[in-house]
Length: 215
Image 1 (cartoon, rainbow, N blue to C red):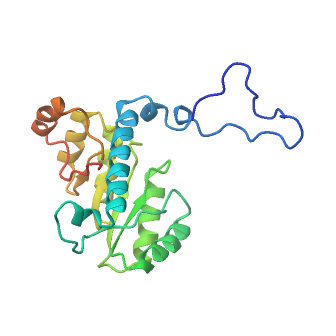
Image 2: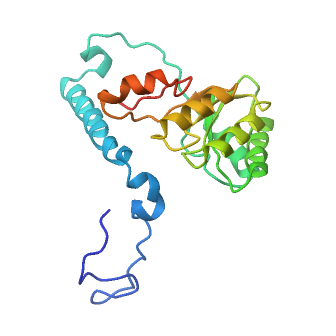
């Protein structure tokens, strides 16, 4: 979403009759200043366009995409992360139970509260409600420093976490390698990777123990 241009109506102003305009709250640069100005924001665009083009081609052919590409449909392990944002622990536990109703056996919980105690409270509330056979992943959405990621990651190691996703900035390659090397729990890297010319550098640094590429 672009910022208002010079001469455009500002929040609180009226355009003819009607109520005041809704305040402008969702510019990416306001919400995620570090991420929005990074290369990842731009790299997501072609990935999403490619996925949409493949989907449109399969729909036009009247086939599942896997068959159009010459494959055979088969079960694929999947997790549900359609929710579980930053919320009160019991609310997160309620939502976790709801996310499992569709038959999922794995869920991902958003962490990155102001303090470690709140992260642990959310994880423990969810774990009390769901079976120990359910895989529980956590995602910090690049919210932490390297030192804080290691501190919180170690605190989570007794909580049965399947993986820790994006604890720090996606493009801090040495930092991601340091975090992954310091923790027993697998770390999942960012879903969008930089240009191919950087792959040798990433691979050599053991950035993460699990990779999660975008389409």
